[in-house]
Amino acid sequence: MADLDVVLEHVDKTFPGNTRAVIDFSAEIEHGEFVSMLGPSGCGKTTLLRMVGGLEEATSGRIFISGQEVTDLPPSHRDTSMMFQSFALFPHRTVFQNVEFSLKMRGLEKDMRTRRVWSMLETVNMDALADRRPSDLSGGQQQRVALARALISEPTVLLLDEPLGSLDYNLRQTMMVELKKIQQETGITFIMVTHSQQEAMSMADKVIVMSDAMVQQIGTSREIHENPRNQFVADFIGNNNMFQGVIRSRSGSMVFVEAGSQLYYIRVPEHIRQVNVGQEAHFSVRADLMHTGDNPEMANKVRGSYVATEFLGTLETDVFEVGPGHFVHVEQHRHLSDTTYKVGEMETLCFAADSGMLLERTRRPEDLTG
Image 1 (cartoon, rainbow, N blue to C red):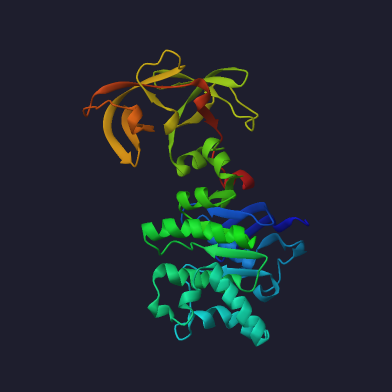
Image 2 (cartoon, one colour):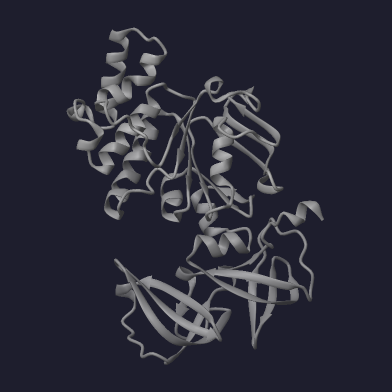
């Protein structure tokens, strides 16, 4: 475990009343990684973060930090630091004093404290405001102070609980870049909890997707985006069109799936070992891999009724209804599409055989108990 800063082995957390908050969580986090735990509210990600930091006791399983088992150790005996969404700065202390506080409590000599604090304030671009108090700072400035205070002790692991949640959109965009830059400069392992796909996918080296208190997928941002493993991940990450049908035949790494009156030719990813003819199946197609118009080179086609167009910068997404309540999104760069649709107008939508991906079932607690 020499190159692993955090290892979690089959960690469970059950609260009174038999509420299972984390179920059979296992993961390995390498030194210097930026890891994001992503999932909806109540999926167990914050509870897991608190267990790593020692603020919650694990019901079962083991937790290691830098090769040492810390499962039963208090927070003070773990080389971690935590940054909360609320920042929790001392209102009566200056920026400098807030950052200095933990070093002072550890009895570090004054000259050494001063050098380290100034260096950290420069890292987070707050050295010019060292004499200000929190009430005189903007939200972004307060966050930088909270980050500096968490990093000043040079922990092995920094735990961040929704660190950008209280910031407005523009400031959040700026702080996403700065947070990643600071992580790279310090080389400290970051574990961040978020429900924002954008934050997770743009900042993290490794993304852990959770739902129902369980890990659904662990991978890089690209792996999660391009190869979602199951129904939950494909649906939650967004930008994926979901289809449901029945497998009618299989040929090598491809299957024919009948959905409604359509027959689709779909790829089977390597991790799916068992595919049975006649079983119910779900598959997804990314919106940017869908095309409008009848393209004879594409294996899959479906007719849809135009609903609306969503604009985002240079991208536009046309939305079509291909069945009652079943909407398909087609994303493309605006300059590639000069078609203007009327509501209700019919269009043919196409996608290549290898653009559709068969999905596993979402992991559920009953899969382990029953």
